[in-house]
Image (cartoon, rainbow, N blue to C red):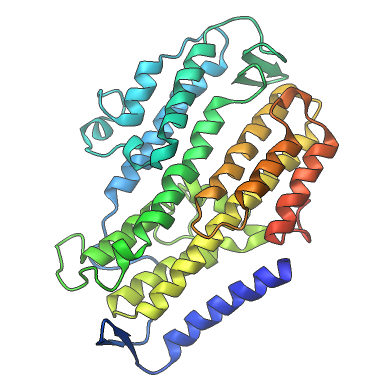
Length: 369
């Protein structure tokens, strides 16, 4: 499977490079011939009229929500569900950053519609189990402490803070990239790529830039890895094994450069690369956290925390329109882990890790993730 996936990805990359180097080509769309010119990508995401302030705002909003949720990791601290939900919907001026309160953006409306209730439920639930001073344990929700680590967990050891944050990496960030901004509706040949709005570019350019904004990296990534957030932060975490930093960043730069010269063949090739590689990143990070849980299996707080992250990243893969991990695969992997994190076994965790690794071709380095 690894060889097959590597071959396919290499083929996509080679096709894109060849498309950049070859002579001008013609593409026929609705009986109209569109001339495509070679693509030259810059060293950084440095283009005229780039704007993705809405995406930056949402990254900041999630950061503030998670910071508030984490205060519940201290026994006796009561969280307020109404405040958390208000932050999620940005309808109550509840952020400490005044610019976020003034923003017209929010996370809720950009979260996959059928998942909105789930994430709102996490906020309600984390508030409900907070505030108690009785330690969390198997069958009892509360703050689970092992050594210096303390995490607010439900009665089965799941940490709602991680399910919410890492889950939104899929249901909001990845979903918006893969199922909104990098689709024909936003960047197809019928989308305006002629009329330039100062500061935003054409509609097609702007939509591509907004997809890039959800990646959460600086414009000179991966040379610069300062200030990484969201998907970008976790991409960097597994870059040593996947080489994903350069793959994804090059695809974003090349795609935007392709739009600038109306080369839709190269642009479309970058979409395939970006979506496939982000899914691989999510899967690799899931394996990383399963490894952490195996290493800390006897430490309740550590293990529950690691597994909550793994669980969320496994779920995040499902927002790919061409997902490698089927729904049945996901359910089988979750069954191997089990829904009570206090009662997991080494054999179950290794089975889950092996299943993910086989699907995504990680076998050669699965223990190093």
